[in-house]
Image (tube, rainbow, N blue to C red; front, side, top):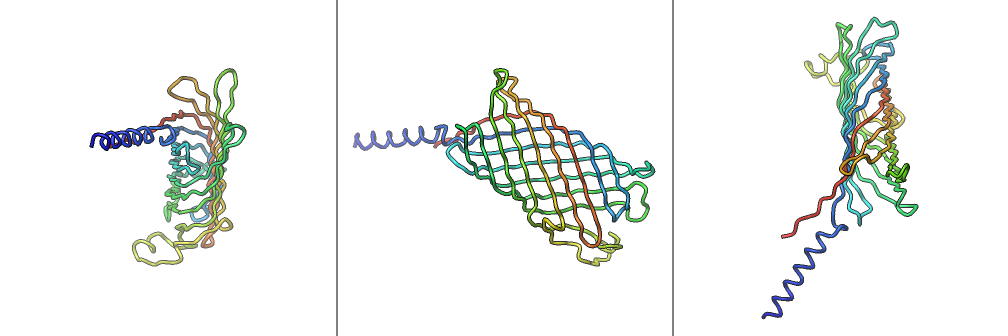
Length: 268
């Protein structure tokens, strides 16, 4: 009886050691950044003019991966707000959007683990608006789309001036999706008050709604518990549906912080 109890205790102890080993830990890398830069907007539903101005962004990136696994989970939140003017400075618009990205990436480690390449896909859900302060009829345009985006990431670790640096480049392109759009000449009153549907939920592809989102960042560890991150985020969005054209180009200089930590599963 005693030998069976000792064997059971040994099995429980080994299981606890295995569960708390680094290979079973979940490594989480989280970065929070603020961005500022130029915004360029065209929306022919509101105006045939091009609008340009300054915009601000808040970006959060969270990646979860186990050291012994090739697959990782990537989540990103991006909120933008811009004030823009036409070329004659006679009209003003306010543009804002929130984008949520979620997806899976497969990893390859090269050059003695200095270089990590990842490929996979993201689902992008976006909500936003464009408001023209000069229009009395149809002054606002709603923006909503859902995209599937093939994604690639390259991360390179190196040392410079006796400090660890990490360079990271992320690229996402659209494959297909759906978006909301009024039809040419259709008022929002007709859609929401009278219920007159006129092809307002439109399937899209990389041809009708091309997009190029890319982010280049550089991390430098300045202190033990945190890392400074600087970078650039560019998002080039276009769409041509329902005889309407729209583009929103954003360019942001980013600055923020990155932190990496591990979560070890508890054992009973």
